[in-house]
Structure formats: structure tokens, C-alpha cells
Amino acid sequence: MTDAQPVPPARPELGTAVIPASGSGAVECARALLEALRAAGMSDLVVAPGSRSAPIVYAAHALGLRCHVRLDERSAAFTALGISRAGRADGSFAAVATTSGTATAHLLAAMMEAHHSHVPLVALTADRPAELRGTGANQTTHQVGMFEPFTALSADLPAPAADRASGMELRTWASTAARAAATALEGGAPGTDLGAPVHLNLSFRDPLTPQTAPESAAPGPGGEDASAPSRAIRLGARRDAQRAPGVPLSLPMRTVVVAGDADEATGADAAALAEHLDLPIAAEPSSSARRPGPTLITPEQLATVFAEDAHPLRPDAAVVFGHPTLSRPVLRSLLGADDVDITVVSPTIDWVDPTHRAARVLARVDPSASRLTGDADAAGSTTGGEYARAWAAVPTSDATTWQTRAALAVWNEARNGDVLILGASALIRDLERHGGPTRARIIANRGLAGIDGTMSMASGIALARAHRGERGRTRVLLGDVSAIHDLTGLVIGPTEEQPELDIVIVDDGGGRIFGGLEHAGADRGLFDRFFTTPHGTDLAAAARALGVDARTVTAEDLPEALGEQTRGRRVLVVQSSTAQRG
Image (cartoon, rainbow, N blue to C red):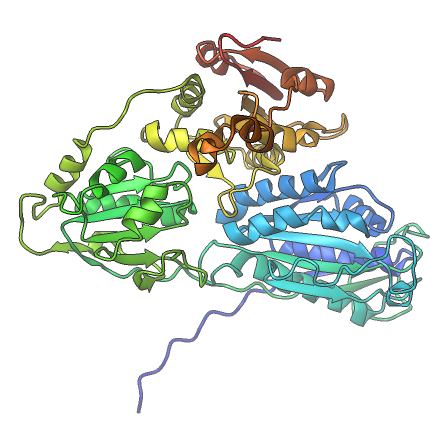
């Protein structure tokens, strides 16, 4: 007789909901869908205005959902992405809703970033019913599956009956929504808080507005009866999962820990492994591993060590957490070396191994049970501490530009409990080289390292933090080109909740990042026009024109400005002391 196996816990139901008759099957199904999404963890709905998506608006208003309205669908999607980033650790997420046609296309960039950053995001795109597709009907295009291969789930829900949704239609919309929410929250990797984007294409048939005053009746035996004024439906089930157990590592004493962009749990494991074994760690600013305690090493130190094949600090092994993207010395010299044994720690199936040299891939490690092996030598000891201290002694340049000083002013102002969002620009690389440990939460869109939607995402994070009652400041640091790409993200209507957000834009008149790439050797005229791309935009004036308080400061002025107590949003445009100040 075999030992009895433990019985897995039952999956808790999401409950039931009463769907009042409204004279519009579209509004009734939209309500069933939103009820299920809310029960499964949807905290916020970001809406871009439109007609075909009106049933979602009427249903959301009737349910009293927390909604945010944005004029630009791209900004709406990145706002939802920010809200989901802030809430994914506790099982919540945001959805973004658009009308049909070209409006749907503007969600793509945020869906791509959500996919590569493993953030739960639900896209609700309204569509015409089947009989109007392929007929040349206005604002009708091929929306089904348009975000693949970036979605973990894509569903095309058929339009319900015009005047009244059937019980089967209501249940179908609700159960599909429950499945979509579960996939969004767990699609990145079951048992973790790594999510994924999902897409629900919603067909709505006229009428798109309620035709009668919604009636509310208590659910009863006749809840499914077609003649009943309201019907009770089940909303589906929530999946329960636990984070995968960690694996202890046995590592040589000359081991370097690498922490790329990561969720907080993965970053915490990276920092804990480095601290427990006293190993040096190369931690990107958004790794959640740049904490006080472990010995931080920089790309410059890595480049110095790997410049000599026989350098005494050349590592024998590297343990990689998260998604390293910033440093060429990390990706080429360390992870591309034939003589470095590489362990990748990734809870997802799309683990990071761009050099194709990983010896093993683990879902999670147990830092406290890991140990160092081998005999001590001149470069290390049985604790690893001598090896880490030797790395710390490798010289680095302390030369900084005014842009770096501005970035460090923002970095150093961040305290425990604060959130700092970093745009994809030269600034995040400045901080990788010069930023010290921090207890603030650092977030960046490093899934694709794109510059789009940064201010909108930061607004979403600030809104989510306010709703969760979190203390501390929320700031976003970005370059001028990134800011220009998201100027419409500053447009938030007077009836909308205003986020508490500091927006710091380092304006050096173009894309400085290209000066550190191989393109810097190009003809100066070609380089300036096609890479640096000077813009000539007065960003402070642009922000004020869009309704946000803004002023221009220098890097030297910035620390004092950051210390000011303010409410709502403000923009600080940082320029060199010789620049024209507005």
C-alpha cells in the first residue's frame, strides 16, 4: 500500500454576480466580464474614449470601478502597465480598454513591454460583430490575435444577442475573463508573481447603451430564467499556486553574481546569495539587488579584469539573475567567456542566455543553503570575502558629467519607501557605473529597453501606490528624447485623479547614449542628424502648455528642488549651467 498523497487545496471560487437586465446584451456581457476581472484581481481600468467600447464604460460606471481616462491609447496602455507593475506582487493588475480600429494598434508597445517584463496586463479591445467584419464597415479591421506572439492568452468573444444576453453568453464572458485574469497573473511562470499580457477582443452588437434602467434583484432559483429582470452567474475560479522551492548552489570561490532587471523576489535572492557567500555582485539599477551589504562591482571594473586573460580576479563562475541588458562588459566579457561556468536563475521558460553559454538553468536558488567549495588561494578564501574585497580595490574613474551628477542627485534622494522609475537612456547607464546601494524600489522598462510610455507608466505606478496607501515619493528620471516620445502622457483631464509624481527630465538636446556606441565614430554631421537628433524643444514650456507645473534647473540646483514638498505632478527640466534656462 502506498503512502497517501496530500490532497491539493481546492481552487477558491470567485463567487457569483447579479447581472441586471439593461436592454443591451453588449452592456450586460461587458458587466459580466468586468465583474469576473474585478473578482480575480483587477484593481483599475484605464479607458481611452470611443463608441464601440461604450458598453465597457457603462458597465464600469454601474459597478463603481476605479477608472482612469486617457485621450491617447498608447498612454492609456502604459498607465495600465504602471498600475500592474505596482500591484503584481499582491495579485492585482490593471486592464486597458479601447474602441475598435486603429485605436487597438496603439496598445502594442505596452503589450510588448509587458510580455518581456512579465507584467500582468489585460487588453480589452472592442470590435464589430461577425456580420460586419470583412465588409468594409467603418473602423473594422483584423483585431483577432493582433498582439501575438506577445500574449499568453488571446480570445475573441462573439457578440451577444442585441437586446438581452443569454445565460450562456454571460457565463462565457465571465469564465473567459476569469481564465484571462489567471493567465495574466501567472502566465509568466506558474507559482511566481511574474505575469503576462492577455488580449480579449470583445464583439459588441448594437445597442451599445443601456435601453432601460438596470433592475437589481436578489439572485434566486429563477436567476437564469430569460424572463427574470436579473440573473446570477458564477464568475469562475482562481488558481492557487506557490513559488517554486529554491535549490542550493555549490560554487567556486571566484564567483561573480550578476543581477539584471528583475522582480523584487528574484532581486532579493541575488542580493542574498551575494551577501551570504560574500561575493561581488554586478547589479543593474533596476535589479532590486543593489542593496547595502554586498560588494557592488561596475562594468568598468569588469572590463579592467577581463582585459587580461591571466588577471588574478578572473572569475571561474557567474550566477545570473533577471535580465541583464545594460553592460557590454557583462554580456560580452563575463557571460561570453569560454572559461566561465554560467548558472542562470530564471522562473520563466524564456531565460536569458544571449551568449548561449549557460551550463544550467534553475527556477530558483536557496541562498542560505548555498556554499563555496575548493581551496583558498591568493584571490579568495573560504568565505569569499577576500575575493570580493579584491574586486572592490579595482580602480574606477570618478569623472562625471553634469548629466551624471543630475542622475545621482535623483538617485541619492531616493529613500526607503520611495519608488524611482528610470527611463531607457544614458542616465540608467550613468547610475549603473556610479550609483551606490539603495533601499528605494527601482523600476525600469528593461523588458525591451524601449523609451516609449515612460511618463505614462510612472503615472500608473504613482496612482497605484496612492490607492494602496503606500508612503514615500514617486519619481521618474528620463532623458529628453524619452520625454518627447511621451508628451501626451502628461495630458490628464481635469475630472481625473492626478498622480503624485516628480518628473525629472535631463535635457541635453538629443540622444547622448549614441555617443557611447560605435556610431560615435561616424561623420559629425551624419551623427548629429541621424543619431543625436537634436530637437530644439522647450520641454518646460511644453509641459506647462499641457497643464503640468514645470521649471528648468541645473544639476547643482536639483537636490534642493527635489527636497521641496509638493503635491500633484511637477516637471523639473535639468540643463547644463550654460544652457538657455526657461
